Image (cartoon, rainbow, N blue to C red; front, side, top):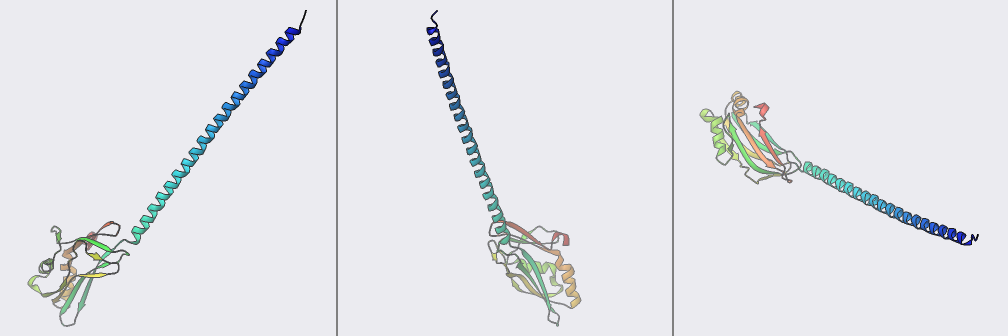
Length: 211
């Protein structure tokens, strides 16, 4: 029996199987390489996106902190500053001032007042006489010395003091104390204003808990 053809057949089968195995291995390697390349690209892209989002959030957060700091550093703070003086001869002078104790300028929106339980009224040039007539009346001789209306868009700079009303009353010291402790407490002022960053504020004097 001639086994040479059989050996050649086995050798061909071996070569075919070896070629198929090498082809399969190369294909798997290529697929595996493509998979890892795709996965690596996905991870790299995701990491880049995550870093970008974190940077955006940090930028927005820092901007918000800076804006808050700027608002606080430019916030106006109005205060009512009453003054009372006595010339020693029966004339008492009263001055009602508005003082900006904050670091920023105050842009007025409105100045209002009310006496007792009345509704709020806008403070205008004729309001000073109305207030004095209601609080003092004909009991004491009084004289309006100065007045100022803080209309809309009027500006009170930081550290500035504006006189809202100044008037004098002829009475003795005991009567002057009664005016301060009783009559004048019937009056309330309300001021609505804003800062440079359009932050809106409301100031009422005397405060609600002191009424």
